[in-house]
Amino acid sequence: MKTNEEILLGVKRGDASDFELLYARYKEKLHNFILAVSNYDYYLTEEVVQITFVKIWETRERIDMDKSFGSYITTIARNTLITEKQNGPIAVSLLMNLFLPTRRKRPWSAVLLWNM
Image 1 (cartoon, rainbow, N blue to C red):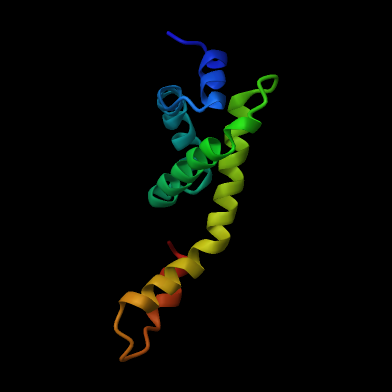
Image 2: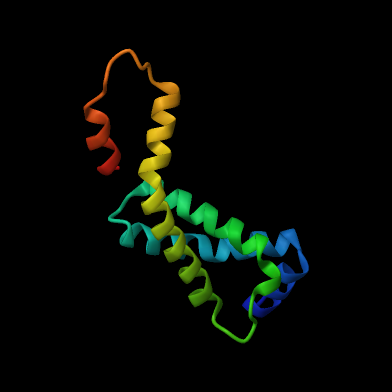
């Protein structure tokens, strides 16, 4: 079994199999953390976890081996959650306007968007 340091070094080098190990090791912990701080919003939690791991992969060269990876990933996830909470209703509103018929006004949409 590889240590966190070995996995992180592999990820920094761009090793996809080490990234899969990292994902397997941290996904559940990160999911539970985000689920709790998002008031148990399952769909938002899934989105935040996926975006967080994409960000980890895209910025893998910047992983600091001298600092706690657990703190690093939870900080990215927390900031992603804040961004998604701020931008979420706008994105949902745009999607609703694209895919729902516009023949009549939908007064329920404002309530729906903010309760998601």
